[in-house]
Every structure is written in structure tokens, then in C-alpha cells.
Amino acid sequence: MKKIKYSEITPENIYKNRRNFIKKFGLAAGSVFLSQNLNFSAKAAPKNEDLKLTEYRYVTTYNNYYEFGTGKSDPVERSEKFKTTPWDVVIDGEVEKPLKLSIEEITTMFPSEERIYKLRCVEGWSMIIPWLGFPLNKILKKVSPTSKGKFVKFTSILDPEQMIGQRFPILDWPYKEGLRIDEAMHDLTIMVTGLYGKKLPNQNGSPLRLIVPWKYGFKSSKAIVNIKLVEKMPTSSWMKASPNEYGFYSNVNPRVDHPRWSQATERVIGESIISPRIPTTMFNGYGDQVANLYTGMDLKKYF
Amino acid sequence: MTKYLKPGVFILSLFPFLIITYKIFFNKLGPEPVKEITHFTGEWTLIFICLTLSISPLKKFTKLSLWINFRRMLGLFVFFYATLHLLTYVGLDYRFDWQPIFDDVVKKKYVFIGFAAWLLLIPLAITSSRKMVMLLKNNWKKLHRLIYVIAIFGSLHYIWLSKTIFFKPLIYFIIIILLLAFRIKIKNKNINYG
Image (cartoon, rainbow over all chains, first blue to last red; front, side):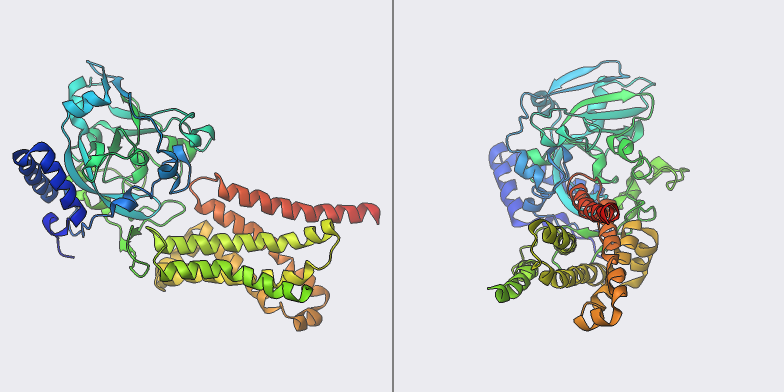
């Protein structure tokens, strides 16, 4: 497959968004923003990947967000009134300078850039999404992790009043996830506050979520309230639910099948009924950037 | 009046098929069309299994034997929707690419049990005619008890393919268990009273 330049594939609605963006922030700022994007996508895009963006309506109506229910359309239908302000995020644990930041402080302290990533769900489908976010390492550097901070544990909000799914024992609430410190510090790992040039919709994990593009989607926690540096490997909600199915690493890997589903191929969201599955790539196509994190590790054992 | 009932049930049973056909031709299947068809036909297979299993209890509770008239047709609709479900998976999803399909059947227990359930449906569909009922006599009843096994397989298929049992896989499992438990009760009563 040939590599398609970002400028060639950007659909019209993005151009419109971008124009709004440029209008808002002034032409000069806008063009800087644009050129950064181009640079970035050239660096971070999966190679040999047709980066055709998934339509906004699919990105925002087809979600796995069990806090709002297990159906794909539950999140968009049930999250409209979810309150994302006020919202505080605590960054603590094995750090020298723990921090408590409001979501407003976060968005002003860490300017967002656009990153077009492929999202591969463990269920065997994928989307290409233009996120707005910033590298997680920018936050982590602010709190200065100590030598004991070997892992990062992410905790999402616990609010059964607003989140109907949390009234049932679907998972060990609140949602917990984790990364190794070098994975968390990696430049591809971002904290997301928006998509398609807009504020992050509630059903996509507003106001603050994680995106780790080389791992299955469930690793990328939504509605995060706590980022904790810890010494021992944290147990995620999915690991607790089914330890033989969901490992800590959960890197996209076509050669390691989920015990119940094959991971060799995937369906591209928004494609027509006659389009075939596409082969899944190692590390979701980000192997050039992240494979060195796992040198010498048996990825079948550490799935 | 009763002579219109059967064609009525037939047309009603075709309704899910008409809906999915409409959705295919008018592009209303949403972001993951193939999965949508797979899930739709799979769920309707389970619904028709439940309907077929409801006939005996209905007959008993309402003390009306007319329900029996629909059982064969409902059973054949189980086979119809199960076959559509299988064809969607084999043809639309995997494009008759037999290697990954074979791998799935051998390695993935939910595919294995689903495929087994479909295989077990074949003898039931073949022997569904009046002639076969006459021909097989008592054996026909025994053979068609396979539907109990198929129902359990179908329910397990759904549970095993889902990331969590909440809520639909659990609901179908409970309904099927209740419908099967009802039959055990009848048997016990027979033993107790005669």
C-alpha cells in the first residue's frame, strides 16, 4: 500500500474545522498549528497504513465505555448530562512534587497538538482518529517521579449516580489501568482533551483520557481523576476480571491471539459491507517507535 | 380464523429477515456492517430457539393445543436464521477463506460450539417433514430433543464471545435455563403421579 500524505486525505469537514480554528486563533497561529501537524504525522503515522480518517459520527457513536453500559451506543445515549466541570486530576504516588490540577489548569499548562492515531480495539476493529492532546511525559516531568516510580496507575472517576454501568459489577470500579514508566514516558503516549479539533465528547472519555496507540483500546482509560506513580505493577480492571485474557501489556500483536478471538485481522470502522478485513500489524503499526521498549521480552508470555 | 394464523406467524417470522435486507440495501447498518448482520442474525436465532422452546409451556399453561401448529415452522426459522448467521461469518466476514475459519473452529471455543450447534440443527431440519415424523415414530421425539442441547450451545456461544456476561448473554442464558427447567418439572411430576 502506498503512503498517503495527510494533506491528501483530510476530509472536507476537517478543513472546515481547521478553518474555524484558524479563525479563532488568528492566521499566524493557525498556520503554525498546521505545519506542526504535517511534521508530526510524517513522524508518527504507521507506515504502509492508509490513514483515511474514520468519520466523526462513527468515532462519537460507536464506543466501548462500560461505565455507561455495555452497548456500543450506550455511551453516546447516556453520557450527555455527565458533568466534566469542576474536574480535578491528582498526580501523586512516588513523586517529589505531587500535584492537583483542575482540567482548566491542565489545558492551559499543556497546549494540545493534533495527533492522528490508529485505535485498535481488542474486539477486532480499528478507527483512525485525529486526537487533540499532549504527551503524558510533560505532566510526569512536572511531578518528578522518584526512582521507586516504576509504573503509572491510572484511575478513572467513580460516580454511579451519573454512570449507570457502575451500579452493576461489570468490572472492578472505578476503572483502573497501568503502564510501565518507560511506556508512559514515550512520546507517542498522550493525554487527550479533544478530537476532530473539538472538545472531547463525553462518550469518548471527557474531560481527560489516555491514548496509547500501540496497545489495545481498553488500555487507554477515560475520564481520569488520578495518575499515580507506583513501585509495583498495578492490576487493571480487565486483568482482575479475566487474568488469562487480558495481560498488563496488551500490545497489539497479530501473533498472540486473545484466548477467544483471533487478532490476526481487523475490520475498519465505517467501511462498506463488501470491504474485506485488513491484516493487523505488530504494535498497531508503531513498531519502529516502540519495539525497543520490549527488547528481549517474550511477548507471548507478557501479553 | 385459525387457518390464517399459520401464514400470519410465517410472515411475522420473516420480519427480521426483511429488516436486515432493508438495512443492507439502504445502507443503514452503521459503522460495522458485517458485525451488525452477524449479531442480528445470531440474536434472532436465539430468539427463535426460545420461541420454539416456549410452545410446550404455552400449551400447558393455556391448555390450548393450537400452539403445536407453529412449532415446526418456528424450529425451521431457527435453522434459517442460524444458516444466515453462519453464511455471514463464512462468506461476508471471512470471504470463504477457509484457513482462518478452520483455525477459529478448532481454537476458539465459542466458534466451535456455535458451529456444533448448527451441525446439530441439520438432522432436525431434514427430519422436520410429516413424512419423517411417521417414518421415525418414537425415534423422532428422541432425535428432536437435540434442540435442548442446541439451545444450551447457542447460549454458551453468546456468553463466550462476549467480553462480559452483562447483560444480554446472561438474560438469554436465564430464559433458556428456565424453559429447560420447566421440562424437568413435568418429568418429575410424571414420576410422582403416575
